[in-house]
Length: 85
Image: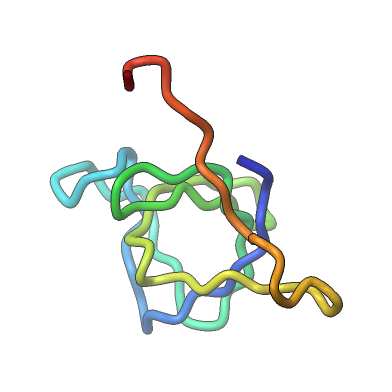
């Protein structure tokens, strides 16, 4: 998956160690924070902050930013996983 820019749309959301609500929270991200989406698994996206911190947040907590001129183009693709038939 190509890296995508996104903005946090939730007021405050914990960034977790893994893509699950049960995973340990490392830090919080706040509404308006710009992040890079590095990966997606299920309903979670792994994001990276400008300071280098990374964590998993619910997909619904971030909105992808589409650069001008990219309207109508796919902004996120998942690569096939080796464990899928």
